[in-house]
Amino acid sequence: MIGINIISVIILLGVLIFVHELGHFLVAKWFGVGVLKFSLGFGPRLIGRKIGETEYLISVIPLGGYVKLLGESESDDLSPEDERRSFQRQRVFKRMGIVVAGPVFNFLFAMVAFTFIYTVGVPAHTSRIGTVLENSPASAAGIRPGDVVAAIDGRGISKWSELANTIYESSGRELALTVDRDGVLVNVTVVPEKSKGRNIFGEELESYKIGVSVSDETVIERANPFRAFAMGMNQTWWFTKLTVLSIVKIIQRVISPKTLGGPIMIAQMSGQYAKQGLIPFLFFMAILSINLGVLNLLPIPVLDGGHLLFYGIEALTGREVNLKWREMAQQLGFFILILLMIFVFYNDIVRIIGE
Image (cartoon, rainbow, N blue to C red; front, side, top):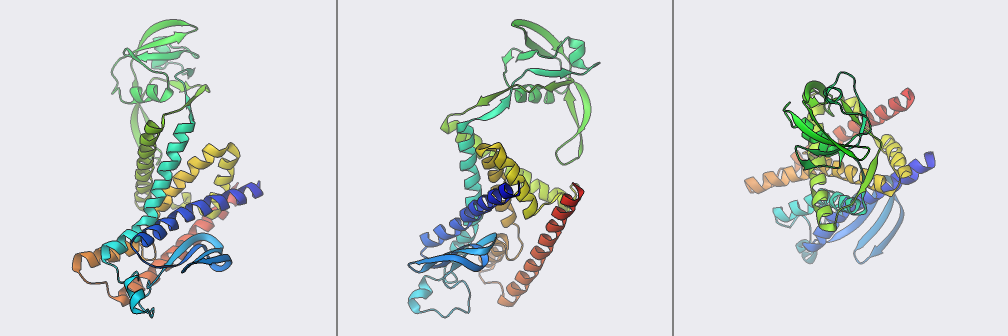
């Protein structure tokens, strides 16, 4: 079990870090900026090879990576030729493009991963009824366990999501259901009732239900490459919004910070998904890639979002942010990240002890 966790998290983080840094690397090369180092991991190097001016490294600490650009530090002593290829001498929008490319590549990776997943196929629950609650609208309408809902208001359906969404959006109006009961079509009418529930953030909300649950019956749903690509884009956008909203909910204290997890939790989850197969593991990797992209865009100095904030101010004012202020902000940002790492490690340890 531990071995699977370790191997899977190495693959997971290795791929996501590589994709992120590849974005910085390729756009820097495209803009003609020199790249001195491309490293997966931090700290002392494990292995490395220099090709041209770039040294490609795998370093000891696997919790990140970096691309070192020519002239990235203002203290670098460069020749006139290298000055033209240095990062700091590029126009501000080019520098912003190089910085934002890392998170953008994380979103693109998720999009490609979701496209592949939907092309190969994902399991989807059918519209077969699992259980019917007593004294519920479904029970009163004569719906039975094992019935397959074939149509709602004359519109054919086959998946549970279609049934659930129609009931949720009904606003309590009467629905005409056609159910397949052992090969015989039966028409029934049901009026969804308002009930209170909770969303994924634990917030109370009102919804409409008829008192049925899903069965274990599933089918593999596949899409052609074009539809799979559209579904991949939609899924990437949905998880991006969900990640941003989750951050907002944590700040608002709607979600407890204790739910945050660190490398240990990621290792445990990656091991669980790896045991389920390639598709579940790739799905988890895509979600984590989106999280990585969003988190890196936060306006915290040291992160890509912090650099974008400084370059954005420069673009608006026409002047670079004072070096002293940048250094102080980066030190504060580094301190915040250290505190966050300690906190998520603490959460991981408490979670393990409590199991």
